[in-house]
Length: 243
Image (cartoon, rainbow, N blue to C red; front, top):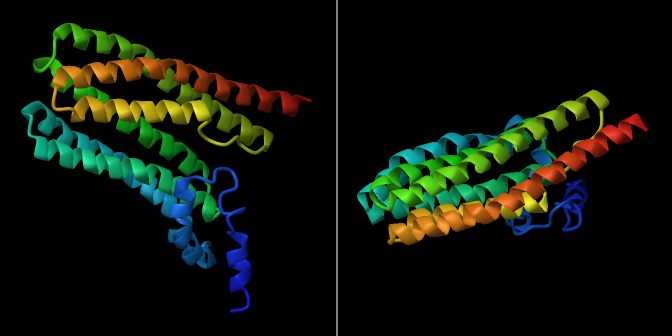
């Protein structure tokens, strides 16, 4: 019992999530306090990874069996139930990272599966919107969106490649990896999520599709800045180890 105050003091507001004192860190604080004494248990150590792993197939299932059928049939009850489930999945994206940091359980697997789940969520939703819009909006808008999809895929693939190379360099040089997403990346993902919800959720397909196009276009410069930030981190790692 004498150790409990010490354990709780370790997860004070200043140390619970010093890298990012977000709303999510405060939301999971009661869970972290409860589980921290058992943080070495397998299920506690991997709780954040389990949430991230589950989110990936569930995102695909929600898009394929709820959102897409509801969108093309204009079944708003089914569509909005699916969008509500997608919102829960998005919130879990912030919670699992805060859990991992609070429980001192940040892992390489978690750093890989978390952004992968985000990309699956975004790209599968965007593809569902494109496929569903064929009979709902002007074909020229669909072609314009397909054109935008090319740079979107380019940046997402480049971000994955840079992340893999960075991890490899850190392991080879036995140095600490930089923090995951940068500010540009987080802002980009926020715009992408908004684009999906507006495109699928607005009851006027053409307006919703147009909003999605605008937000996707705005997110591209942010994707470039995010990629450049990760490239600078990688260059810095290489320079430090060579010095």
